[in-house]
Length: 205
Length: 205
Ligand SMILES: [Ca+2]
Image 1 (cartoon, chains in turn green, orange):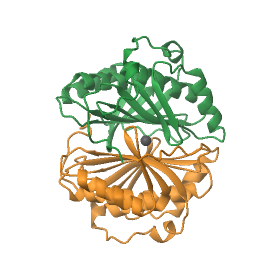
Image 2 (cartoon, chains in turn red, green):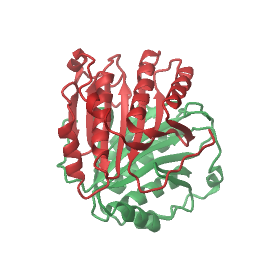
Image 3 (cartoon, helix red, strand yellow):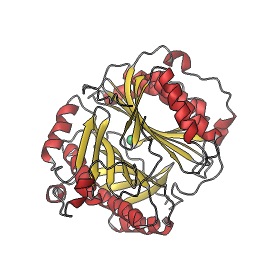
């Protein structure tokens, strides 16, 4: 067996290992349609039966994952995005060629048009050390300024608001982590749209 | 806002923040039915619109999550379990009273009867240091002896086999991490049943 996730290189390719879960009999159609509508040409992509992995520059990894979620959610079905964003690991080079892409986002024009209220949560795991506490708190303050409701839940931070704003906020947190001294950052994210369950937002911040 | 996930205490309560995703119009029914059939009386439980958190002794956290997944998968629908197991963090005490429970698993008799082939993956994040590499490799060897197919994928280790064996193997890995010197361990797990996608197992180990 090859190395597990534990041995880290200094490669600064970002990645997201994720899946979209449309809670409907038409789940295959919802996923295929979203994939059709999103331009993934600036990221390395591999899809298997346990999820999809995209790799490339941070901007494009977020551009693609945000767009896929928003397009799927737009169907009106209850859809959940669950993903792990990672940078600094593992030590292989698959997709490194995509680091040469420019920073122009291919899906931003479409994504920015989609209004979609979401409930989400994220956890940040700075595996490579670094000074990040102040950064996280200031980033959470910035999210609040964008109208995102932020609250603390077990093992995670909960986010409620406009889907595109939430993804943008998460991208900022992740980008700032990469700029900090952490050599390996992992961020787990769950974003839910159109849930029939009632919101459970704790207003005690 | 309260502390994020970063500040760790020495509390040895385990937890799993997870969700079941049944890809069917009957998703609410599938989840409710599984919850009905599983005895959660030895764990602290909180369910919101972004998932469920169970906390308690490691044995019961795994007993309950394994049973919920297997009961949901048994419906034949495409069902995914996505969860983050954690021990050693955060610093609050909710559910600590459940650490006084004995080690008798309430759902094992039922779970052990359920045959369910799965495809899954996991990643281990030892946030609190410790000597764990040999432990992980020996545990992966033990999983292979149980007939689980283990392969390396981006950011994770893929597992294919009998659902209950996979959960048992993951519980062993997690339990051994807790016994190692790591003061805070996080393990992300995705387990998929009845996927219409073809298997994508790399036989080059
Ligand atoms: Ca997940």
